[in-house]
Each structure stands twice: as C-alpha cells, then as structure tokens.
Image 1 (cartoon, one colour):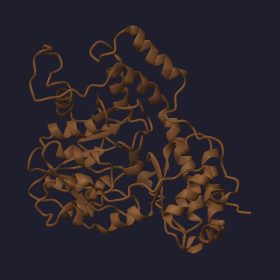
Image 2 (cartoon, one colour; image 1 turned 180 degrees about the horizontal axis):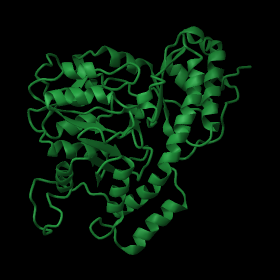
Image 3 (cartoon, helix red, strand yellow; image 1 turned 180 degrees about the vertical axis):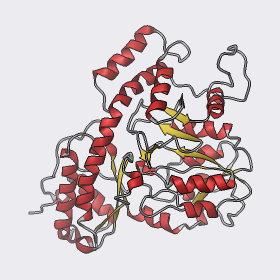
Image 4 (spheres, one colour; image 1 turned 45 degrees about the vertical axis):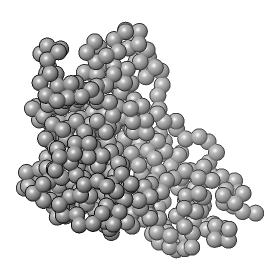
Length: 407
C-alpha cells in the first residue's frame, strides 16, 4: 500500500492551518468603536493619525502616511520624487507587478536587473551597471522579507544622485544591520493587503525620515492639500489615496502582535532550515547566517528545488502536488520573470535595452522561476507544530520518492 497521500496513503496533516488574517475580539471591538462613533473619515476621527505615528515609531521613521494600498505606497512617493515621462527607474526582475507598474503609471520606464541567487533580491552590481543618464530612482525590494543589500545599494545611489524607494511590502518589522526596513532609503512602501504580516484587507503606508518629502507625500495623497490650510486650497497635483478610520483601527490592533509573531516566524524558520539543509542534493536553502539580516521579516519562507539525490526524476510540480496532498501546501511562486509579463509587450524601453522585453534573458531569474518554492508566513506563526508538519511531509516525500517515480 502506498505511503504517500498523493497515491492513497494517510496525509501528514489533516488539521487546518492558522486562519489568516488572524483576528480576535480586539479587532472586532476596535472597528465597532469606530462604526458607532460615526467618524469613519480620517479628517473626522483620530485612528489614521494614531496609526501613522505608531507605525512610524515601530519602524524608526520620523513620518508615515497611511494610504489605500501597497501600490499607492509605491506610486505616491515616486510622484513627489519627480519621476515622470522619459525617466528610468531600476527594479528587480523577481517581484510583484506593482513594483514596475508604479513606475509606468508616471510615464517612466522600469529597467529590470537581475537578482542574487541566495536572496532573490536585486544584485547591487547589476543595479550599478544599469544606471544611465535617464535614471532617476531605484526600488530595491526586500523580497519575502529578506533585506536587500542596502549598504551597497545606498552607496551606489548616493554616488549617482538617485532616489531610493524601498519596497518593504513584505517586510513589516524587519531590519538590516540594525536599521528598520523602510527607514534606510528616502522612503519605504508597505502593504497591508490580506496576505500580509499585518493586514486590514487592503491598505498601505509610506515611511520616511525626510520632513519635506513627508509633507509632499501627504499632500499628494489628499488632492494637493497642505496641513493647516483651507480645505478647498490645492497646491500641487494630487489624488485621493487616503486610508479609512476603520482600516486604521484594525491595523492599530494588528501592530500590537507584530513583534511576537515576527519572533515566532524566525524561530520556526530555523526548524525548516535544519530539515531542508539535511537534503543538500534534493533541496536548497536561501542565504543563512547573515548577521545583517538576523532580524529579517518573513512574509514567505523560500527554498529551492534541486531535484537531485532521492528526488532524481521527480519534477518540482509533482513535489508541490505531493506536499499539498500531505496537507502542507507550498507554492512554486512566479512562473516567469517579471519582464516577460504581457503588459510589457508594447511598453517603452530603457535607453540601454536593445531587445523586446520578452527577449530579455537575465540568467539568475531564469533559473529562479524553475526552482523556487514558497511557504506562506501564516504557517510559521505560533508554536512549532505547523512547521514540524511541513518538515515531516518533506521528509516523507523524499524517503518515499520511489512511489512518485513509479506513478
């Protein structure tokens, strides 16, 4: 009789994982309080401003502006940095579409650069090589919560006079060399979408330590108004990306759990590291033991599918199906480099890009999309029970891989 659940055996796990978003009566009471107050608009209530102050303090930033979503948290600061038609903004080729689309909505061109194989973050050497006279800014992404190499990136940006917008949408509570992510560059963009480590369903925030930039970001997100001036006075081109009082009330509660949940994710990640590290031919670890990233945020636990050793002849896709059958679902992540998305087919190119986007070939990301594996962050929250089951499922599949080869 088969041992693997995919072929009829008993699964490792039948219990449900921690529900996400996680909430309790504290969130219910916080939102109920706002509803009953009748003050749902940020200019009537106090919750958005309270959250901005608390979030900025948590991330060692002088200012935070709460916005509608993580995409707005990228678009708004780019606008006030003066990014516009003809400008180039350097972005990594392995990230969510919003990192690049936020550039394009301003008429600027995203210039894709390759990533590091052990972090899936922007390679600083590729960043510097891509700079042209048109380059205005760079958006390093702290992908999955692992910090980009910000010391190198900041030094390069300073040398060339470029703005740095950290895409910290995966990185709530994470740090690099003791500096909180989102506080290192000129500004940081955060998302509170439903899957994120703290969430209000949708929502975002921009952090910065630059007072003038903070004022411009605030004005841009509320129709060009200026604090302390008349309501119908509009000083710059703006839009409406304001957060509601109910979202902010949710996030104030969510923020109280972030530090403890972040510690739990780091502890549980080490359990997975130990398991996966024991199968060097079959699977691969991302960068470990990096002191600069010892307080990384974990939005996704990532590892690699090598498919050697006991897994020889077993495809990554079959491994993913086998894990799901064991009650421990994992994802293969993005199935193509970002530059191959259809939306770029007719998009303008950077001055140094000589071929169409779908003809680009950047070797690290091309390999990454064939080998990456993701475990989402909620599986690492709480005690070790959930990740113990993931480890057990991985071990079970590797030890019984003959069943998969036999079909």
